[in-house]
Length: 184
View 1 (cartoon, rainbow, N blue to C red):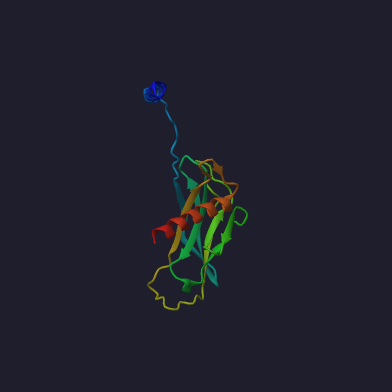
View 2: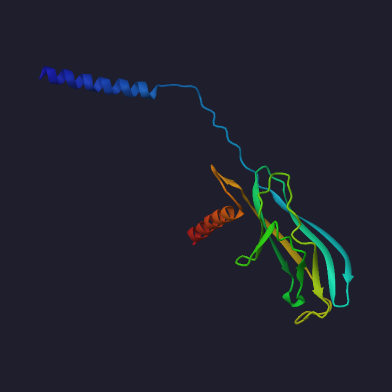
């Protein structure tokens, strides 16, 4: 009995002193350093409104490229749309070496990673509108608009460095799809 009482008191004292030692441990404060990435890209457009007319078509001089203004490497894509398909317009001199078109999402992807301060090559350098355009529902007073929009994603996600533009865009679009389905 005395032995059991002595053993119980020793066990309680051991637990209490061990817990007290654990809770009173003081070390040097740790500093966790990290850098927040800044993804900032913009479209640069050159537009020369002096139209060049041939007998069969009108050619408008226009260029579009993307600049990485941020502090992280990125992959970019461009979407180019016209105010109306009735104009039968087409992009001239597409750069198919550095850009690739994806019919599924109607975007042009820049194949190379874009480092901070760098710009892509121009996707195109003009727009051709046939002289005998199908005006359909357009009137003579309607103007023709070209809309160029860009999107970008980081070339790195945590410790994961994407090998190319496809892997990066697939990763981020799948992540976004997950976010959208969770919102429903």
